[in-house]
Image (cartoon, rainbow, N blue to C red; front, side, top):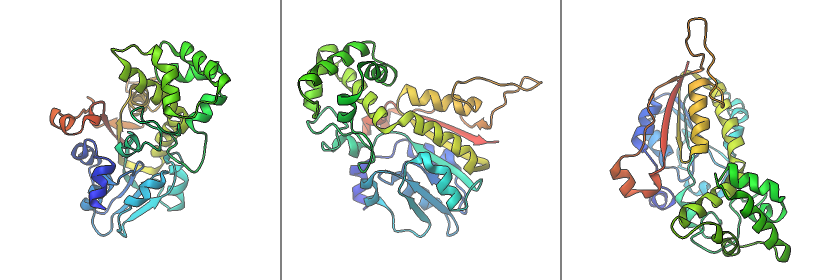
Length: 305
């Protein structure tokens, strides 16, 4: 199992995130993005016999990485259901630290059957939970041009969103779009040769976010984290693109997703959190060299007041 984890996903900013959790040996912790179990195994090493760790993951592949440890509880679910599962385990306002590594696992990008990467041909799936929900192909073949344009614009931050959406709708009138190669044939003309990789990554990011309802799920998890953390409990979040980082930054700073600051009579910001790192933490040059996929990562740490 230990060898499997390296192939699955190299934990990003491992030491920095564990330091941010400020782990107490008898504490209660939650890893809401269990994945390959890299962060979780390191947390377990720092826990004593009375410590407890809950790991959330909706992906069936992650279940191969569950450690045989009585202190660990695996929750087969999306992290948007954090509150109800922690209530079931009688752990509301009992959690000392919660970790969310929001990146898609290397395992997913490297698995051609999952459809997350434009590097391989395969089915346009992109579901984290392959047991439920619409696939990327379903979305491309059924959404209106307007709705597709919104996805590409808001989630992919693409200026040519309307043109891409119109091209998708034209193409599907002749034949359903089922494979990655079929999608690439449609969208490549809009990318330009010099920045093609970045353009394709933006299109695939937009589809993945919509397929997995990532922005809504993230908001729900962050709001619920407030309810499960005890006063003084730490929230540690690693983001990988500006959309999710903006949400996290605003929520940790102000307690809302708009970043609207509410101040008391004395001018102090009313926030449910105290920022542990005022300046965002990013990977060092050595980590980026060893794990290029960490280059866009940003780590933010806050403590519940």
